[in-house]
Amino acid sequence: MTDSNDSIRHDWTLAEIKALFDRPFNDLLFDAQRLHRENFDPNAVQVSTLLSIKTGACPEDCAYCPQSARYDTGLERERLLPLEEVREAARNARDNGATRFCMGAAWRNPTDKNLDKVIDMIRAVKELGMESCVTLGMLTREQTRRLKQAGLDYYNHNLDTSPEYYREIITTRTYQDRLDTLENLREEDINVCCGGIIGMGESETDRAALLQQLANLPEHPQSVPINLLVQVENTPLYGTEELDGIEFVRTIAVARILMPRSVVRLSAGRTAMTDELQALCFLAGANSIFYGDTLLTTPNPEQNRDQQLFERLGIVANGEQARDDHAAA
Ligand code: SAM
Ligand code: DTB
Ligand code: SF4
Image (cartoon, rainbow, N blue to C red; front, side, top):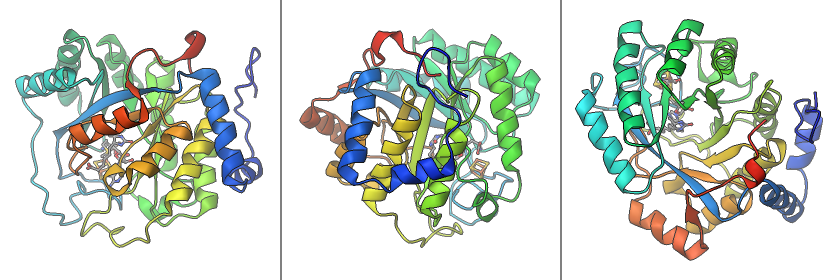
């Protein structure tokens, strides 16, 4: 399927995507950067801050995750945070320059009672003039409706990897479960933040197949986080062979080409990257980051380090990103 009025495609074949991965690096980056500038201000990067509102003791078995109750990662469990603590953290994030506040909970899915509490948090974030995003696990249609009514701007729900590699990573929920939640979100017209994790020992074909799934959704996710696995001791994926940095940049470039109007987030894993590698990711079309010293439970680069990097690269945090009011399609 191709949108009638432009070149946004939803019919990418795996062979086409693999051919993009196989291109000479300079050609791939040039095309990604060209498309990037056609659709976005090339020097604007959106900045989001994360907060874990409910930490650890998760019943799911995601092999990468320090918050699964099945792996002894030494993580301190926390119940759902009180509203005032969340408001304070959001105010801090705003004062430090974030425009979106993303709240994550270590749940398989929210109960309706917990959803009530999260809705109060969303309202508090919106009162501060920030965009709100939550990631709470699987949602029913009724729950998406309630989140929409509360004014939620984005919901993060990742496909994580290719359908084929998925069974190596998670057994407690299916790929289809994830696609169903994404459909519920689309039906309520909530902006979708959906991407995956690379560096989990998957093949390049798996990375291509993950991007194919994302690009061939009925609508491209408005935001596409590309996470580099953060290896946490005692999770099953600890000790996985590190992904080559050039391959990471290629993945960002291919995401940019397949989903030219989506915001691509250089997401988890930046503490393991040099400034030069991050600069290449921005050149390849990444235009969002998580900002703040912690992601959900693991470290992220310090804020002054990111400010210095933005200054050295002439990158402007936030500001108007899209050209000609392009919306992701
Ligand atoms: N429990 C909810 C869920 O899984 O949908 C929401 C929170 S979960 C921590 C959000 C996302 O964080 C996961 O889908 C995964 O993509 C990412 N993530 C978790 N642990 C990670 C790690 N060690 N490295 C990179 N990304 C990770
Ligand atoms: C996403 O794709 N990456 C973020 C956010 N969505 C919720 C989470 C990264 C988590 C990294 C591991 C941790 O800090 O616990
Ligand atoms: Fe639980 Fe989410 Fe971690 Fe999976 S990724 S173990 S669902 S917190």
